[in-house]
Length: 493
Image (cartoon, rainbow, N blue to C red; front, side):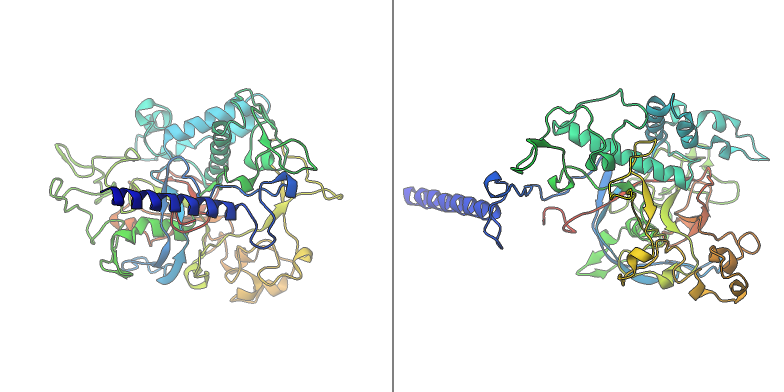
């Protein structure tokens, strides 16, 4: 027994020596031999952080390959979701849709910070509650109560257009990163921020927001000041919250992580749940409807005393069963905005890794001397589109706006009408005859999934619809996503 203990102690000592040795190696450059985080060798800092923390409200979505597109017959014969195999990098997505309470918090902050100086900022963020009106229905109680009454706090926010949803994502990024700096003891609470003097992540990183500093980071650069602000290299700040891309949303909705065995999908899905029907085979709830949708003409909730989905309009955001990723209501309840611009042939043209249509490449604005231009009235760093001249030596892109690449630009025109006006910039309007034979334009944004007012067909993640980015609906909400940095699997960095 004593000999076993001696062996165990010896192994423990050896392990500790190995760990200490590896730590010392990590603190020294393998290419120059200079030590890291040492003012005597120049003070080059290397953070010990290796793992991205999970932001509030998010669920990790392990990436992989899947067949994007139709999972059932194309009843409308649009042919805009032809099956195509793509690969999605790992990312994060909200567990539920953004609720009325979440959005009310956002509006309160806007009112508190911009209410006196820039009241239009608050007004422009307000949801359109009039989306509930119907010429032949009495929905005024929903107009007045749905967004603000406490009974609806946990219900998904609707009446928010694509632009408003993106602005919410930007605001949420800044609030989460501000909280992280407070928890790290870098900043303290500053509820008196007003106007442009509010915390934004990019302004802070650019040195244009100092805030109420508690204890700044020690600066190891011997030629600099004693302290410094947090940098992206410190691994404290999170990537931005944003709308998911269409490919990400569809991948997450299918949730094939629960249907694979040795890289084989053993059970094909039509909806976010298993099988091709809309009822559960759970023994306790056998035969119950698994999502909130319109079962048939005039049937939104079923018959009294035996309601089918139990919701006549949207249900609370955490209702029904989550899919295999743990995401709620990826089919039914409300449809959801995604990041992409709509084009009928996107599935045929898109890249097969992290596909997305809608890129407009920008850069931070600088003055003639190369200094960063002051932030705007909302406290945000100003951007401008990249120019063709500065990208002449690039092979991956030349111009800023790539929304119409391969579908709407001059090279993809199927008619020669544009030759009569070579200066015409909006080629999409010509190709798709916007306002004449279609509503496809550069402002047409995709929304995914079925809603409480849709039939089961639209619950399939592969279905696609679009709406102008400045319009809203009582059936469309949204949820946020975040890119995963480093290894596609947590703990592997």
